[in-house]
Amino acid sequence: MTQPITICVLDSNNYFTSVATIYYDKRAKEYGSIENGYDIEKPDKEKLKNCSAKWNFEKEEWSYESFSKEQDENVEVKIVQTPMYYLKIVRNNLLKESDSIILDYYEKGKEIPKSLSNYRNQLRDLPKLIENGEIEGPVFTEDSEQNVRNIMSAKDIISFDWPKLPELENK
Image (cartoon, rainbow, N blue to C red; front, side):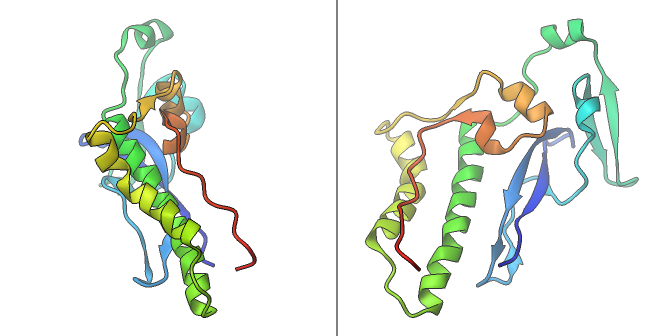
């Protein structure tokens, strides 16, 4: 199985916002993609504690803009995306993870468990259910800004009650 890749997500001004994981799609024979996601080196974690990081595509390097702790307390949250943006990143990654399980069943000629199909349908339906007000949407965690600065995954930036991957018999 091909290993997932961790990528950096940038805002429209090329400032670092978060990291995300993309997975290899065996059918398409390529890695998935995330809007504004780039397979570039991660910014320095230590510098992110006191700086914003901006990627320079020409030089292929990070530049850092310092701010003091006092400035940091007065600066508005640097997250430029909505909680739904991060929900879709995580949801797509969970679907891609389960793609490999589905492929294993398919390659072995085994029937795909109904519980796995239901799980994938629940993931696909999340945006529609939230939009219709049938379930509560994601919210940023208390530490979301710090999690973005510390290069945490999209799942650490939002709080949401995710569907659970069912326990499966030997695939």
